[in-house]
Length: 87
Image (cartoon, rainbow, N blue to C red):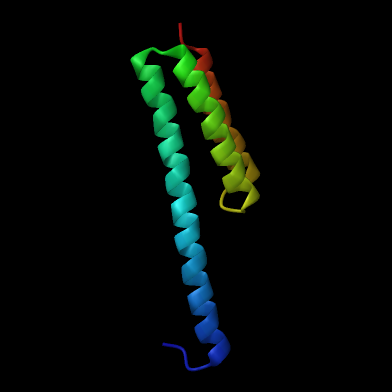
C-alpha cells in the first residue's frame, strides 16, 4: 500500500475508473448480444432496433474514452453487416 497521500488518492481514482469502464464495457457486450439474439430469431425489425440501441451504447463508450474510435467503428460495422445480411 502506498504511503504518500497523492498515491493513495490515485489508487482510489484508478479503481473507480476501472469499475466505471468495466460497467460500460459490460453494457456494450449486452447490447451486442441483443443484436445477435434478434438476428438468430429472424426478426429483422427487432434486429434493426437493437442495432440502433447498440450503436448508441458503443458511441457513448467511445465518447467516455473506454473504446478507441476505430474499435467502436469496427464493432458497429460488423453489427450493421450482420443485420443487413438478414433475409
